[in-house]
Image (cartoon, rainbow, N blue to C red; front, side, top):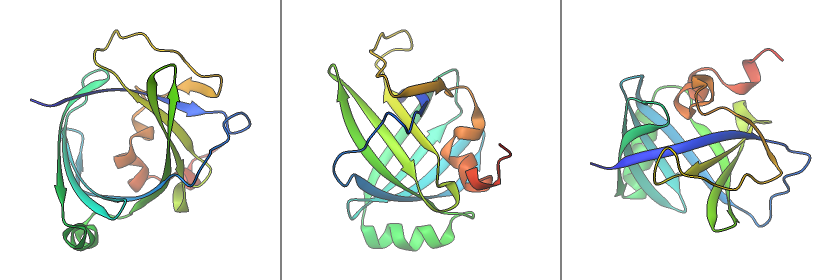
Length: 155
């Protein structure tokens, strides 16, 4: 079984400065129940269908399959409202790969960094641009950002 172990942090936008163009990602959810999510994504002109199980701590089952971009485009039209658009930057910090997502559209202003780990107790270097950890805060799950976008949050 495939397992995703991930930690998620807010990013200090005053310190983090993206380099390069990043990857444009559009994604939507066919199912966004807490027990499972089924996500459709277009990234780099490729489609992906991803099924994720219920989160347990910072771990969950994850199965991802490459699909034709045209299929992904059709599936995005079947998704729950609304589609998330973000630009992803990949940053290597002391050999660890961080994915920094700069959200657009209804989630503009939100910047989140994620690191995938081999085990829940794995040590890693925290870059200076990391803010508060939000791994356990469900409002930062992408599936929830599609239903309750950042622009609607009270400051």
